[in-house]
Image (cartoon, rainbow, N blue to C red; front, top):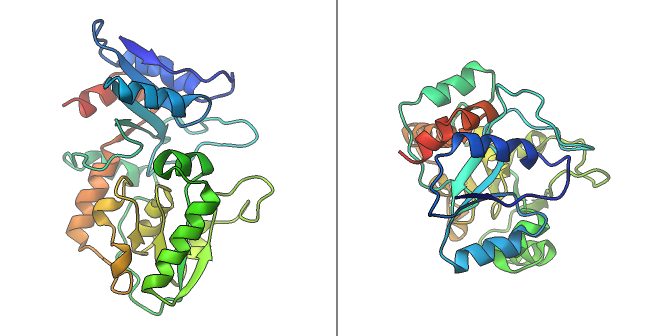
Amino acid sequence: MIITHDIPWDKCLSNQLFPAIKKGWKDTPMKPIHFFWGLGSNNLKEIADVKQKNEEWWYVDVGYITDQITRYPTPSIDKHDSTYFRIVKGNMHMTNGKPGDGSRHRKLIQQGIDAEFKGWNTGECNHVLLAPSSQTVCIYMHGLSQEDWIKEAGEQIRCYTDRLIRMRNKPRPNNEWWGTDIKDELKDCYALVTNMSLSAVDAVLNKVPVVTHQNNVCYNVSGRLEGINERRMPPRENMTVWLRSVANNQFTLQEIEDGLAYEVLNA
């Protein structure tokens, strides 16, 4: 039994994703399978309830390496053939995905999406970029407000390095990062530190090593905070396998509706 936890807003993209899932996902009438879009609305409580019941659940959100949706003022999918969404079982991020044959990764590159590993920046680097997840994610992952997570993370970073720490929040209308590009802040960046933000994907695609939470999609190529002065920079072959895994765990709306997402994720 497929159960979609609908969000009561007619502009929410879940209104496009959930019908595609219902059409493309193999139903199991005697077994509840829950789907959540993000952590908004009442999802925090409902995910907790599902976990307590030990029932199967999947988290649906924007993809990792993709053309981006328009978020403001109204969310929309502008390029249906190259906008990908992640569907993750029992977690916010894919952490142990299967790389497949690499064809989906090659397709991203052919579509003109920035998906190639370019090596690591080993030249002069000046600062650590601290990039928190949203308030809702910080509460879900740590039981902390975003402000408290930023404070704790900053204190921990200072235990291991005396490099300048810069902070970058998610660009939102009217905040200081709105209209800016993270690539500008990744120039001469020594390392990016985050909990669950997809800024980690931006970092590794722009030659910057990362330190992330263990549930972040980048954790398998991430360093550890206590080793930030040495930085972990996996070799190209490891990064290629990781990129293939990422590409193999995100899907277009049509691929979800056609059942490809179900086949790949349940293989």
